[in-house]
Length: 338
Image (tube, rainbow, N blue to C red; front, side, top):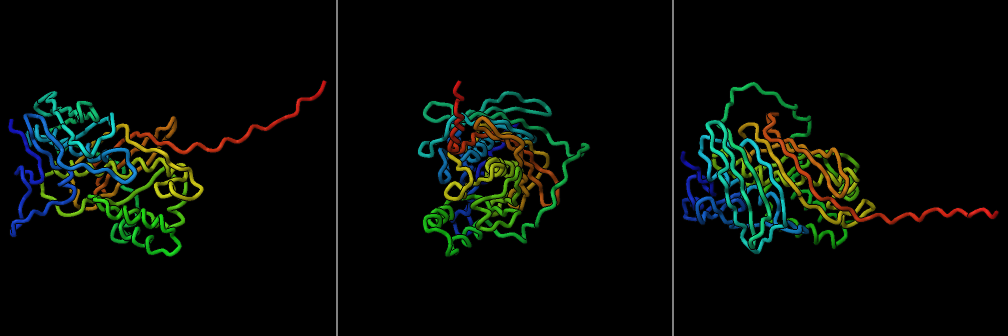
């Protein structure tokens, strides 16, 4: 059984040069690229900490762990599910080591467990299962919801530029938005709802959201690479569905009457891959949250291809803490005199 070696170019351990000798890798490929330092042992090359985050972006770790696991699996197999836990925040100043355990190799299925470490401590663990595909089997799915087509919607960057140009926006918020534009975001987003500035400040209470998503740039044809890219991207905005159920959002953290978010962090992340897809083509990410409580929120996601095929399902629970509300003083009642 031969292993696949999934790197920036699936057939090479180095970036693919253009005709002029320069490299032309997408941001996402750079974020996923690993260095193989021993058998079943890999080291990260690039780690990203989003603005305001406690540590490395969770999708960065999930995607790299899946790259490491896939490197030890025959190309006859394709990942069909992964289940992972975030144990400690990742430190972007120290490379992450990914150790792959070859749990089982069967004829139809094989299993890998990946443990991510920094400074000798486990920060993340993931088990991925692979299957020899059987595309002709009977299937069913939830239908894709009817939403505006991505061609009719503005990108996240366009919306941010429009907000910066709004003369009514406070200067401190403009500075914050300019910093967001400078972040090395590897993906494009288009929200299916056309929000006004007021709605962003004080979002309506709802338990679902949806947006179009794709990676920036063109990828090669290896399905394994597209699966790792979506594993990276699936952690974007999913947990943000929980604050929406409380009339809050990342933007209302800084002003407005909505509950203020004091902490958000992923606890676990699971994915199921149903069929082939391309991560450099528009995908619809439908997110919903059925429950929150005890400083935790549960979310589910469905990722559809543009033709309506359900390609990936996602589940995640995370820590979601809000600023405690000012307690209302208890009513006082005079004790009747006897």
